[in-house]
Structures are given as C-alpha cells and as structure tokens.
Length: 274
Image (tube, rainbow, N blue to C red; front, side, top):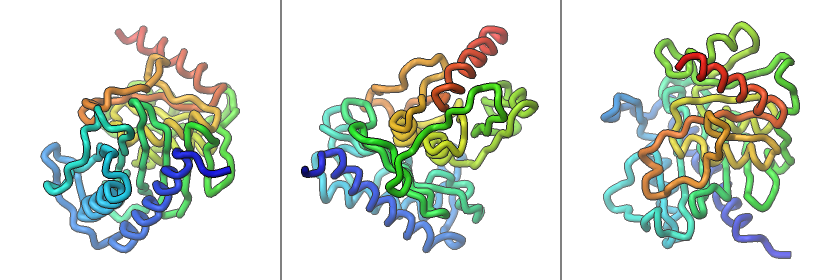
C-alpha cells in the first residue's frame, strides 16, 4: 500500500526539521542577535532556517501557502493562505531567547493545515535530536515509536509545563500550582506540547501563544490520546487562515484524565476572579 498524501507531507516535513536542526546547530553560539519591532529577539539563524524552509516548500509545492513567525523575504510570494489547498505553518526556531543565550532548549515546529486544521505536525527538538511526528490519519510518534499522553489523574504529583515570568499573563493561574505540583518552563512552547504528547509532561498551559507555536503540537497531543483546547475547553480549530498570523491562541493541554479535571478548576478560578 502506498503512502497517503499526509504521510508524504509528514516525511518531507521531517526532512526539513532535520535540516533546520543542522543549520541551527552549526550557528549555535555564533548567530547574530537583533531586536524586532515588538522588542522580542530574532537571530540570523531564525532567518536563515526560515528562508531554507520556505524555499524548499515552494520548490516542491508551489501551490501551498506559508504562514511563518518571521517576515518572509521580499522575493518569496507564496499563495494566499485563505485559498491554498494546504498551508504550512512554521516556527524556524521556537525558543529563540534560549538559542540566543546558548541555552540548549529550542526546536523547529512545522504544521501543515487543511481548511484551518492541522493535518501534519512535526516538532524536532534539536539538542536531543528527537523527532515528533503526527498526521491526522495516523498515530503520533517519537522517532518512529507511537506516543501515549499521560494517563495520570489530577490528584497525583503532576509535572506541568507553563509560561512563567515576573509579569507574565499566566502568573495568577500558575502560582497556586507551584504549591501543589512541579512546574517547568522550558522557554519553548512547541517542546512543552511535544512533551505532553509523549507523557513527559502531564499538562501544559499558555496564555500568550501564536499559531506557529501550537499547531503542530496540538495535533501531536490529539493523536496521542490527549486534548488541547482553548481555556474554556472549546476546540482550537479550525482557524481562519487569512488572519491566523495576527491572532493569539491561549491553550490548555493534557492527558485524558488530568485535562478535563484541571480545566474545570481553571474555569472556577476565572469565575472567582471576574
């Protein structure tokens, strides 16, 4: 039996992730760092990896659209994301701040969207070399081995991935968790999501998140038996591909037992603080 179109796209995305890892690794510690208009950091490696990804995608699939974290180069004009049959959503280096400071936790996240929903998701954690892959018609896998999201219930010693910072929007929710569970912030949302899919984290939460941070990871979690929803428990997808690059996508992700229970607690917290 031949490969499905999604399996072919996933294989190509995995090749791109590996190449992105080689490029990022070669420039680790030497990439130039500059500030974007919003004050966040970008490195020369982010731009070089993204240019490679967009070039190779359009060479093979000129009718596919691309939505990416960094601004596309002026000579790259992909099709309209709202009209193309597939749209690639890419984060060339998730964890740019880590990467810029030589903290070796960063990844490349690649999703392929169809009608506003991820149907291929690939995350490559470059320092470990781990490759997470999922398609909408197959399992989530880590280096070819099927994944299962954590089955731990809420009342056990959970390991939680969450954005943290002195002025971060998640603080009011996460601070009480610090007294109950082990909370981690790796500085790379895509890695948090990949770890939920593999059971390395029981849950993950983010209030500030862009489509390129979460599209691939959300599919991984779904295909691994977990759930990734908005903060009210609603579906994150489909999204409007014409405007998704400007939107914020808060999410709450976890295994099939912890996710609904903690989502109920989160809703109660929101009600009590209105």
